[in-house]
Picture 1 (tube, rainbow, N blue to C red):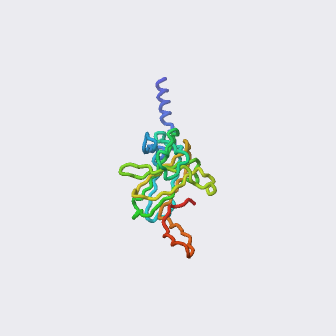
Picture 2: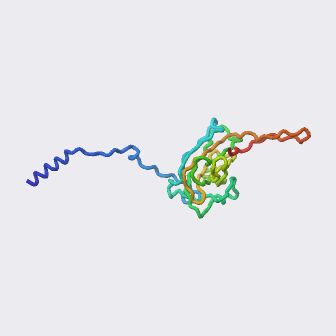
Picture 3: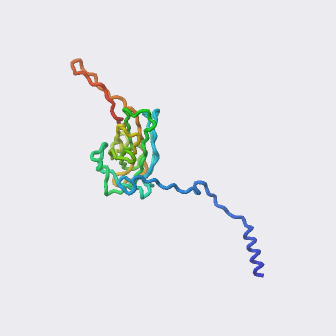
Amino acid sequence: LAAAAAAVLLAWVAALPVAHSEITPEELAPEPEPVCLFEGTVDAGEAGLPIIFEDEDEGVTKAVSGDTSTVDPSCTGTGIADGAEFPTTPTTDCYDETAPTPAIFHTLDFSALTSVDGWACLVETCGNTSFDTGVRLYSSAEDSFVIEGCQDDGCEDDTYGNEDQTSFSFNLGESLLYAVQVTGFEGAVGTYNLTVTCGIPPPTTTPTAAPSAAPTTPPTAAPFASP
């Protein structure tokens, strides 16, 4: 009798509807592994979105955002030294060995341009950034990147309300690939908005000289200025 009852019970259980939880494709897909650059060094950082420039992008501001608080621990480098101003000489001033700091890299790719002659770039984290940023600039050399300098602050307080953000400009050289690394001062982390504006800057204006004054020199191109 017991065996017969058990068989009936098992048949009843088997006939019950099976409850399935809803699973989205995103939940089935594995989390992408972080791509770390310079892992285990003072330059370590996680790879972020690239910024690609073409001829029609001259004078156009391109923006990417990120959150350094989500950087994988294996992608942690060191902070920017206080008061660093681009260009930084020596570039060893761009590191603070006592402050492990997550960082994110964004490459600047100019390989699609017909020519980079006279081009300069303005790099900023002035708007919609939640922490005290520091930015390092690298240029490509053969199969590696070489640091060109770094900037800790630079934004105008009366324009953005926070002078702890970063703003600097640089002239393009022979390299067609650069990397901008966003990190924080003394371990600071948070969300940021990185903007990069590149192109041939307008010439500097030269005041009109009085008739008796010496001839003025022709205007020359200057790096982009912060707003």
